[in-house]
Amino acid sequence: MILHRLQLTHFRNFASLDIQPGPGKNYFIGENGQGKTNLLESIYCLGLIKSFRASSDLELVQKGTTGYQISGEIYNELSVHHKVAIVYNQGRKAVSFDGKKIARHASLVGQLPIVLFNPEDHRITSGSPSERRRFLDIILSQSHKSYLASLQEFQKILKHRNRLLVNIREGNSKPDELDAWDWNLAKSGHHVMAMRKAFIERIQGPLKDIYARIAARPAELVIRYSPSDENAATDAQGFISALQSHRQAELLRQQTLIGPHRDDVIFYLNGMDARRHASRGEQKSILLALKLIEYDYLKESSETLPLLLLDDIYSELDEKRQSRVVEQLMQIGQSFITSTHIHGDLDQASTVFKIVQGTLEQIH
Ligand SMILES: Nc1ncnc2c1ncn2[C@@H]1O[C@H](COP(=O)(O)OP(=O)(O)OP(=O)(O)O)[C@@H](O)[C@H]1O
Ligand SMILES: [Mg+2]
Image 1 (cartoon, rainbow, N blue to C red):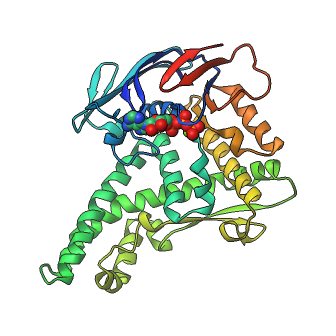
Image 2 (cartoon, rainbow, N blue to C red):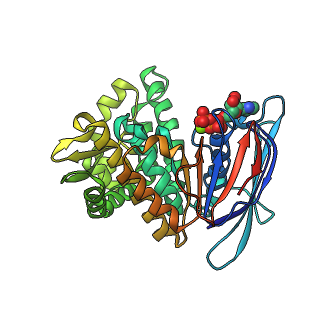
C-alpha cells in the first residue's frame, strides 16, 4: 500500500497538516519534541484505528481543542484508491472508508497493513508476557479478520466472567452460573489460541533462518508458544476441560486462569531462555528478526506491501549489519523514517520533510 496524502487536524502537536508523501522513503527530520513520533502515530492510527502509545483517544487531541481528525488517501499495487478518515470529537469516534461510515471499526484493520519499529519494542523480548501477546495480536489482527473479532469477543466475555467469579465469592451468584459463560469463552478463546499457535509454528523455520543471517556468530533461535494450558489451545472442548480442572483455583482467586490472556511466547537462544540469558545485542537481533518476520507475514497475508514506520531506528540499530538489514527493507515499499538528522547519502527518490514544532516543510 502507498499512503499518498495525509491530513491531520488538532492531532497531538499538529494544528493542521496536509502532506503528500512519496512512494519510497520519507524522512522526517527534526529535533527532540517536534512531533516526529506523533506523525508516525497518526499513520499507525489509520491502519490499526488505535494508537501504539496512547491509552485513550483523548490523549491524541491537541491540547486546548475538543477533537482530532486523521485522513489518509491510499492506493494499492493495482492503483485502486481509497480514503480512510478518523474523526474524534467530544468522546465519540467515527471512522469512514471511502466516505461510508464504518460501524465496526475493527473491520477496517488490515486494509492498510503497518509494521512499526519503535524504541519501545525491546519490551517484546525483555518485558512481560503481555508485550509478547500484543506483538502477536498486532500481526494477527492485521492479517486475519476473524482473529480480531474473536479477541474482542473473548475480552468482553472475560470481563463478565471475572465479575461473576467475584460475585460467587461474595455469595451473590452460584458456581453453576459459570457453565453458560464457559462455552462462549471457549469458542472465542480457543480460536485466538489456535491461531497464535499456528502462527508460531509457521514462523518457526523462517525465524531461525533470519536470525542466523542477522546474528554475528552461529546461533540457533527457537520460538515456542507457551499457553496457560496445552489442552485449551487444541479445541473448544479442550478449553472447557481446562476450565473445569482449574475451577476451584479460579473461584479462590476470582480470576479466569485459562485463556489467551495468560499466554506467553518463549525464545530459546542456543537452548537458553533468551529473556533471561541473552545479551542486549542478542535481544536486539531477535527483535529485528521478529520484525522482519512480521513484515513478510503481513506482506503475504494481505497481498500488499505493508507501510514501514521506523521511529528513531538509527539510534536503536547500532550494528552495521542490523542497519543494512533494515535498509534492504526500506528499498522495497513505502517507509516513514524519523531521525534528528540524515544518515548517509540521500537517494534521489527519497522525500524529506523538516519538522519544527508541529509544522512540516518538504526540503527534498
Ligand atoms: N495532545 C497533545 N497536544 C499538544 N501537544 C502534544 C500532545 N501530545 C503530545 N504533545 C507534544 O508533542 C511534542 C512532540 O512529541 P513527539 O513524541 O512526536 O516528539 P519527537 O519529535 O518524536 O521527539 P524525540 O526525538 O524526542 O522522540 C511534545 O513536546 C509533546 O508535548
Ligand atoms: Mg520520538
